[in-house]
Length: 406
Image (cartoon, rainbow, N blue to C red):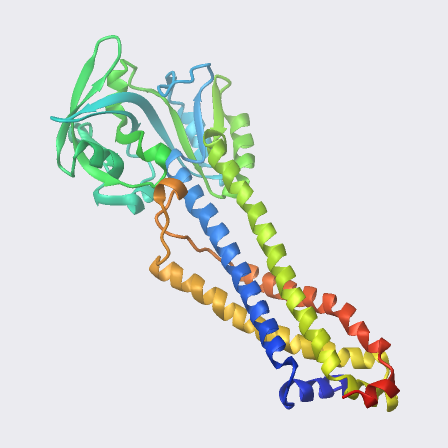
């Protein structure tokens, strides 16, 4: 153990502090709160981005492929199913699923209510992983019985509440086209995505029925919905599609389908950066104040050490080591505080949100251990580097005057 670390351990753990006791405690609490808030901020931002992104991806897919035309309505122009194109997608490691879809506006009419919706037609190739997690009651569409599948629909809890429908209830849906058509359906399941644009608009039904209603050929569809293996490679996958799909088709990503939401999510990163900077400032200012008071309280000791031949840097290291101990205690408590609340919220969903405003019912938490490690290392390094400046006060203390100081 070096001389500086030995003296530092003595004044850190085996001395009765007087004037500096309160300020040291405040500094430790400041570090604890700073790190705890930073951990919570990162966890919440990651949680928000992950949850909302997963909801949009689960419903709309990562990439949509449709006819290359100027049709901006819900009901896209038909395209013929291309088995070669589908095989190329399924053979690529960039994608996990490809399924045909058809979108068609309709009007649901019950005995007492009426509601305009958009029905999204899917078939047995559709990936139900997301919807199974979002189900409030009932089940997803069962395609085992083709005739019965055409009568099944899944509606959102918002639509179910508006129309006073529950699982098993029957209703008529009208489709406005050249000749008005109506079809009977019953509620197979009720879901709650939590995204207003989805829950207020869409219901899920059978693709083959919509193909018949549109008077399309049996091999015609509205487009394809694709899921990518890695969302970080979304643009790479989209570029791959551009090379593989026929010229008459176009593709657009989920970020292009919901630009407002994804811009909002990207702005959350800026909010997190501002929060981290503010918390680091709070922690370092507290530690600077504490170190200055500790140095002033130990003026006599500094004078004696200088009189014995100790160099300024050696004495500075004593106080830097002392400050490091205090920062370390603050970091340990900060980890307990931040990780404890994160784990509590993740397990209990105690802190709730307005789903209409935030797209979810509770504050989401997602944290990687690398985030925690970087926050701890960053806080420690920044605090110690900044504390070098106030520790230079040692050089200005005169041995003779310091020994007389009481």
